[in-house]
Amino acid sequence: MNVARTIQRLVWRMPAERAIRRMMGQGVPAGLEPALRYLITETLPVDDRKVLAPIGGLRSQLLAQQHGSPTVFDSPSPIAPGSIPVPGRPKHVTWHYLAEKTSVTHYWGVFLYLCAKHLPAQTILELGGAVGMSASYMAAASPSLRLTTVEGSTSLAPVAAANLRVMNPSAIVLNAMFDDALDSLLPRLSAPLDIVHIDGQHETVSTFHYLDRVRPHLHQNSVVIFDDIHWNADMRHAWNGLCGTSGFSYCIDVGRYGVCVWGGADSHPETYSFSRYTSDWRNEDHNLGT
Image (cartoon, rainbow, N blue to C red):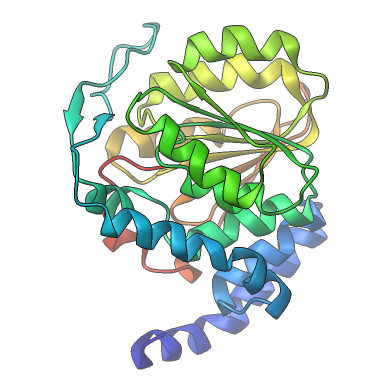
């Protein structure tokens, strides 16, 4: 951490701690507290650092990869309400781009890890696996965790699978379009979803479409994490809509992510803005997300 950021952290620490106490006092699941506290302290126990250490090597391997031009799906432009989401256009990128620009940073990856560890999660679904970085952080939370990530790119899915094997050999990568994967996966679930990470298609229509698809498989206190809620005006509109969505009991803007807790059909969300206390997500390059 540089000096300016350290000073900023010290200034934010007290009001951020008050915000966390308020959220916990109003019923936000206690399992989210370590993840929220990490965002303001950036401190992690030694044992957790050891668990996550291999991910740095996975990122370095991507940076060292010089051959090939993997194909990804760009985030589509906003489409009309009521439409069915369509995949973005395929485009070629470099491995360096995937490692540095689209993969989750360590800061936000640790946040996902702590959410998965302390809720605690046993069943996780991610839509938008890319090279498997965000899934690797979550999968590291427990050897018994059942994690499935969906990635549409035939270039990236094998890389995601290889990366996940390092962190949790039982994690699964489905190489399919999101709706096709959900058609196959959801009817076969043996347990409700503890965490859903919705990424890959950053637009209002897609956000609510995939929420509607997983909604029947949530339980009270399931956590749905929406990536890149400040990506553009359309995603900010999506977040505002989520904050008024019946069924959620809490909606927390932590900066990069919108974290929503499912409370059941009769719930109406309490909303919190924690993003003022977190890392400078406004300057992150959110070209694709992971």
